[in-house]
Length: 281
Image (cartoon, rainbow, N blue to C red; front, side, top):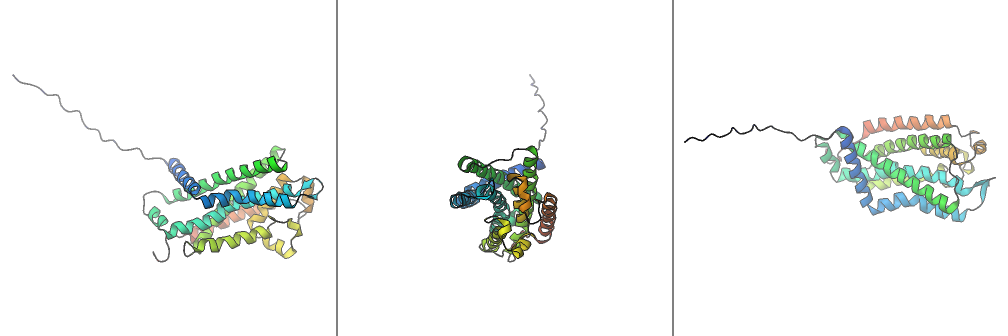
């Protein structure tokens, strides 16, 4: 008696499906957001600083700086701008040197993951945290200080493109300035003074036209001043534009300067960014 055996089914080799470029960027962005939220100091400083400052200044200055324009209505523009700068320029300028010093960037460069995915993750983190911070700041200001939100679609569109250009320029400049820090500890020493000086001369804490002329001229070189000016066109009456140094809100110039800083920041990133410390070679 003979028995027959059925031939074994052929083994088909299957390969795991690799995630696409978009999925990789989203995963990296989710990782960056998680790491940011796990750092309590970063969360408190980045998310809480603008809110704390507006609470303090609104309590101190309760008068109007112009007919129908409260100090809070003026001050909110600087706080939104400085909040976007903090989460992008300051946050990246401090944390990238830490990751470089710990060898995190060196390990990333040694993986098959495209280098641009790491940068995309940083951008996603900045955008998500920046939006959350701005929404929270506006909600607190409306609830506690009767902030008047923009009433027209045109003003909201202006709010959008000023914020996008501003946060893009600050993000690129933050990545670029991170290369100046030689060690993890020096990142804060390099970036924080620059951020504070820009805030004081750009009309964040004071009415811009009350600053000395030479200070206004220096501030006009950098993007923060133009972010504040563009946002003032959103939250302040159109008539307030006559009080600006140029006699109007100069939205065309705002777009031109912020766009130029996006290009400058990109060039600096491409020419100066380092994945390793000097001791690593």
